[in-house]
Structure formats: C-alpha cells, structure tokens
Length: 133
Image (cartoon, rainbow, N blue to C red; front, top):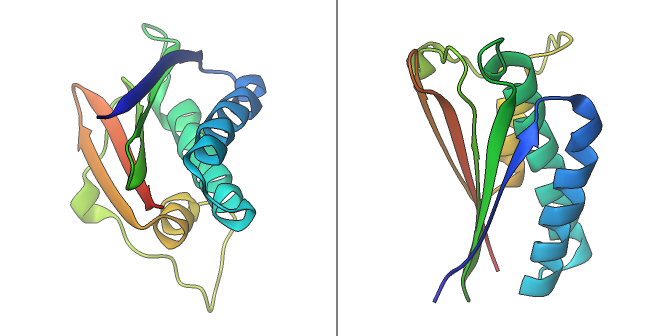
C-alpha cells in the first residue's frame, strides 16, 4: 500500500520552508535517520527553487508536490507548468571551476537514490526523486 500526500504550493520562495517541513515529517514517519532527512530536505529545496525560478509564469502561479510513501521508499514528485527545457542539453557542472547557480540538479542527483527529470515545452517540468529506506 502507498500513502500519498499531495499539495499545491504558491510559486513564492516563502513557501519552500513549508514544503521542507511537510516532506521532512513524512520522511521522519517513514523511519529515515536525521542525515537522510536532511539530504531529502536539501534536494526538495533545490527542486522547489527550480520550479519557482523556471516553472512559474503569468498564467500559472503554483507548482505541485506529491509524496508517495511505501514500506521501501519515499518518492517526491515536483511538477511545474513552465516552459520546460531539453533535458538532453543538461551538462554536469564543472566542479573544478564552479560558478554561481546551475548546481541544483547536480545536488539533487547527489543526495537522492534515484532522480528522473521529464520536461516538455508545453507541459512543464517534473522532477521525481526517490530515497530508499
């Protein structure tokens, strides 16, 4: 059986903390240790910030967050309705010559066990992140 928590979040940075708290509560309930919960919170923050920066436009001011929890894993899906991008064009950052910005996806992939990004110019972007218990 899978538990589902789903909510719509205003595309304002002020609400990222609310998402972090909600997701960390779910992770805590699932039995993750404090280190894993902190990793999940950072990954969720990065995904939310991407949705706010790239997925919010004048016709849609919210993004969606869904948490799927079963006995083996927590999966968090963040959907925005932005213009999307070509995921094939994504380049891993050069960590020897870091620059400000552009590390969000790299951070998410580093902290979570599985990450899937689907983006479409019409439908927006979905980031699906999984952490195993």
